[in-house]
Length: 145
Image (cartoon, rainbow, N blue to C red; front, top):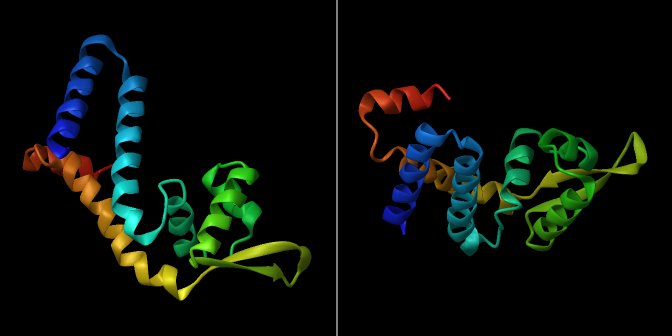
């Protein structure tokens, strides 16, 4: 699968250079990334649509659901569904905001803290896949992004 993936990505970038279809390549890359990440996260019962919420909560634990939606630029309904799945899996809990009893803050659990290294390793391994055929110089340029 990895060989096919790399081949598909490089093929797409060749098209970009020829036809200037960057949007198509970004779309392919995004879908392949989501597929890879979802397969790697399956043992943790975290979907590809949920890990970004965990990443944000690792940085700002206790953020309100609304702030989380704004930060990730994801609509409130999608955020609520993702957080519900994470709560069901034992990764987050909601607590009423002490300053605004109508609002809820979202906190990660110990279970979420326990998978943090694995999650970052999965994301790092995806980056490694992307740069596998690049020269050292090209890898150095990649790190600038």
